[in-house]
Amino acid sequence: MDQNFDNQSFRDFEYIPGMDAWARARLFQRYLNDQTDKGQLNYRLVTSTGCGPVVEMNGTRLISLVSNDYLGFTQHPAIKKAALEAIQKYGSGAGASPAIGGHYDYHALLEKKIAGFFRKEHAIIYTTGYTSNSASLQCILTKDDRVILDAGVHTSVMEGCQMYNRKTVRHNDLDAYEHTLKMSAGKHPLVLVIIDGVYSQDGDLAPLKEIIALCKKYGARLMVDDAHGTGVIGKTGRGLIEACDSWNDVDLITGTFSKTFAHIGGYVVASEEMVNYLKYQSKQHLFSASSTPAAMSIIKAIELIDEEPLWMAVLRDNISYFRHGLLSLGLNIGDTQSAIFPVRIGDKIKNARICHAMQQKGVYVNQINYPAVSLKDARIRMGVTALHERAHLDEVLNVWADIKREFSL
Image 1 (cartoon, rainbow, N blue to C red):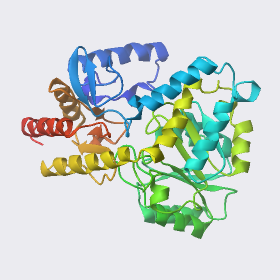
Image 2: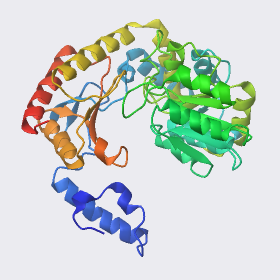
Image 3: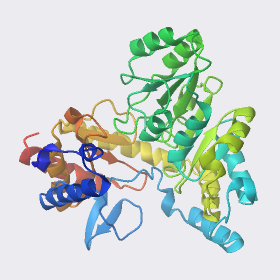
């Protein structure tokens, strides 16, 4: 392996001929040390305050744009109160998996609430958003099926499909979708198309109506993961499906409770038959302990989206203001139409150094490099929330003005 670690990425350490896991780990530690010393490893940074627009790191105040807490609900008094009251009533844990003693009335209520939120009647919940995708797909798919993935879908989807007959198509390329669907039609028991509503790295939207039309034309089913659209897109925050009025055209709706809903866990909303099938066949659901009583806070979060729509209004104002500011600086933010703002840098070393420099200037952002994105698409990713004030956003924009000048962007 090239010992110039600047040329390496995390992926280079997954397999090295002749090295066992311990040898790879030793070499990887050298890589971590090298990149940390150069200020190029901006991951797993420790903050000492809760999720919010401002955090503290090593005693220093930073404006934070690394959170997906879009409506600021992690700090909402009513949501904290719901979690505390649930712990007082039920204790700190569920104590068992859902099939054999770990299914409580608050789990049943949460399933009902999240299904109803998406205008449906049935849902299954998982203890992580990641497994709501990976575990459900491992259960649904067989070797005889064909799954068609947008290149921008989350790693959890990729993992759920990795053992099956899959085809990844270029991001939002309708011609590629149609070609693949046409070649797959009538040849498999199931052809499943999987897209995001809002894509996590680019912040752009799927051409949902067009993809629905193609699925109908070629007899495919459709799964939409709208984790980043929920609470952000749509008149009442139900995501891209609401914005497109496509409630009856999507077979599987998946997402996470860790963003707008301010907790942890995930869900799949589907027909009664499919939900029951997953409840008894999805191994990670069957054999994982159920979510803790603190998940009662999710129920309150779901209710608050309708009870207090002002948070969505504030978020949308912040999105518009920040977008205008970044564009005024001449920064490349791609086609984002959400609360996610990627500033494309295009060089992974420069990207890492910009991330570190922004921390030194009081702004905490995400360094997104390969393999999360392609080598040429290295970018700084930021997330705006309803709790950011104009003064916070102005401070970030001023830092970007300095960064643009210092790094000749």
